[in-house]
Amino acid sequence: MAKRKDASALRIATFNVNGIKTRLPHLLQWLAREQPDIACLQELKALDDAFPIAEIRDAGYGALWMGQRSWNGVAILARGMDPIESRRGLPGDKADTQSRYLEAAAHGVLVGCLYLPNGNPQPGPKFDYKLAWFDRFLKHAQHLLDAKQPVVLAGDYNVVPTDDLDIYDPKSWKKDALLQPESRERYRKLLAQGWTDALRTMHPGENIYTFWDYFRNHWPNNRGLRIDHLLLSEELAPKLRASDVDRWVRDLPSASDHAPTWVELAMSTPAKKATKKSIKKVAKKA
DNA sequence: ATGGCACGTTGGACGTGA
Image (cartoon, rainbow, N blue to C red; front, side):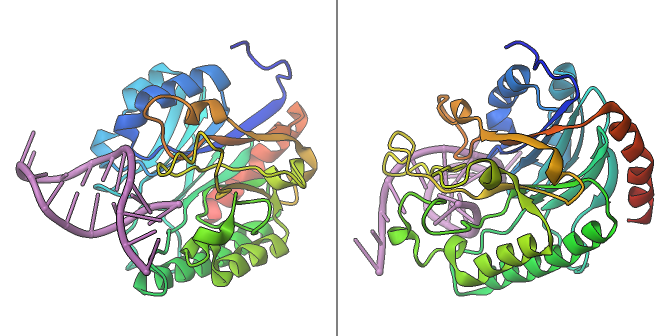
């Protein structure tokens, strides 16, 4: 596919790969075709040693990653450069060993890549962990907003924000952790801090999904859920130009149950330079 | 109310995901 026309446009994407080893061919195909400037990955399901950095470098990307055996695992890819790490792991609980948060500066923005806990079954300890993790995330998100920097928080939030436009039919999901009022309330609180839900902003009133489970022919029937979100800080929200879901990736044989989701921001060159310094400041402080 | 499918695990039934 041809390069995008607007060279100053910055495309940032999030993709829950559901196993980096299994999904590497899809990841490479997607990077080559869509050429995101920054890509956040979740559910690597691999140890650090197993991360395919050579293949990703060959594709023209630098990367940071935080792996874990069997589960979780997140990564940040940046086209033509190595992302500058500002945080590894979500603050607020030293006993939390799950690889779910990574943060870095790249291409003039600060990017937080998250894999919020699923929380099923609920109620129970896993749901408690989800809510506790979410509360820590709210705190950190506020800290990032207070710094007045261009920030994107991208990832698998494991929250369906509303019943009407963000899910095909909530009936069979009523008791699922993804739809619980406690989960939704925290997502609303996040937006109330001042973050902009990019995909919803660009598609108001439209049924739009990022995840289709493997059961019951949900993908062919477009019975999906919107759970992968890109939130923009107040500095970046005015630059939002486009946001969408790369559904073709979900249609590949042996696909992940998630599709890549992205935003495109209009970044003027001077703005890019101006943000570079302040990003370093935030990165140092963090 | 349950299960449907797919992932990774030192190797095959199980825990986990959403």
